[in-house]
Image 1: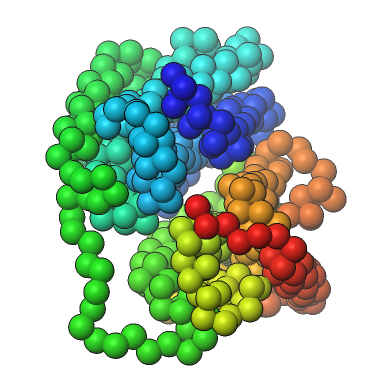
Image 2: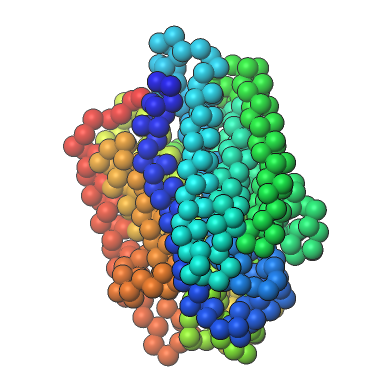
Amino acid sequence: MTLTRLLLRRHRLLLGSWLLLLVGLGGTVWSYQHTYATDGQRRTAAELARHNPATTLLYGRLPEPGTPAQLFAWEMGAFVTILAAVLAVLVTVSLTRAAEDDGSLELVRGCGVAPHQPLRSASTVLAGVATVLTVGCAAVPGLAAGHVDGITWPGSVALGAVVGLTFLLVSALTAGLAQVAASAGQARLLGLAAVGAAFALRAVADVRQVGTLNWFTPLGLRAAVQPYTGDRWWALLPAALGAAALAGLAGLLSARREFGAGLLRRRHTRPGRLRLRGTVGLAARLGRASLLAWTVAVAAIGTLFSAMGSGVVAQRRDGDIGGFLGAQLGAGDAAAGYLAYSGTVVGIVVCGYAVLSVLAGAHAERAGLTDVVLAAGVRRWAPLAAQFAVTVAGCAVILAATGLLGALITPVAIEGDDIAARAFAYSVGQWPAAVATAGCAVLLVGISTRLAGLAWLPLVANAGLALLGDLLDVPRRVQDLGFFRHVPDIAGPQPDGGALLILLGLGVTLSLAGVAAVNRRDVVTG
């Protein structure tokens, strides 16, 4: 239990912030009673959901008759389960392979801890997080029983169990992949790729109406259990057995690999000579593989969202759309509203890349790599400044590729004025938000690498304001403080980019403060 408490204390900020977000999303259930206040709005939303491939792709299939409780489980349930899967990957890698790579687990094992104990303690922490998710995601919406149509305590418990088991399944799968990967970075990429594959399989199951496929993906558990509709408790048993089997497999793989290495060999040397110019060139060289993967993934996601929005735009032009999508589209031009929403989703994902890219610099410092660079005569602030420069340049590359691809494909699917220009502008216009997010991360890392985990908080808070601000009745003045949803409509009468300039100035100012803070502290070397 000593090692378990150590893991909890070390990762308390990461766990606390994510758990607060996921459990807090359950509070949006109250808004569904007045968002879909009339039978007409519910029928409109249900009709849109059942006949539009975009919403089916994102949320799944909406069951009959489309009560506020079912709409809540359909919309918010999709977001919460996806976020729980991402959390599972990040936390599992941090508890297992990342602790080996940074040397902290080696110190613990030097105190006489058994070789198998670190994975067991990590599994205990993951099981505890799953329990908290289950209880929290069941209790918060359950408090609305009797006040929101269709909300019941059995349905809420079923939804909470779905979220908890989704987290447990993905964490057990990631723990197995962490034993195979050569490093923590590779384990993280493999885990996120597994989440992407799980989402794709769930999307195919719902779009093609092949419900059997939902039994083979963690993100399909919600459709199998059917909270607030069927409450099929027996569907939780295969998921629980699958999580136990994956956890056992992770234990077997852990016993068959060397400490600090995976079953896949890491290639330490290359035959060619590495030619670099300065710290910026080094940071760019180390991050180019990650940038390529993120560019392909984000461009595919953004283009898919834009190309499948024809049904949403047509429905919005025919009448009012309530709920989450109605809040995102706004009251203006339907095509511009949907493209702005797609751009916001792309911006949030790219900001996730920005945070991870800056945190890579913090990891390099903790691993002692930054100390080696400084020994070559580089100034102390240069590595972090180079990481910021490479990060914002990488964000620009990802957004430009996404915007160009969207400008080519979106006009084929969505009719309207200046669709190609709007698709490009709403994607590229998210770059100032990415710069501001990267600036926040640089400031925290510059002050202390121990604060690196807090770099996710600005992203989570701003994404919540952008996606849920209207549903939660957050005042407009507070929503305007967020990083997203400031991109002007370039085809509108008077596009104003003043907010984007403010975001750019904020990002540069925060990054300069973080770079200056590095000179006032010691360099961490493990």
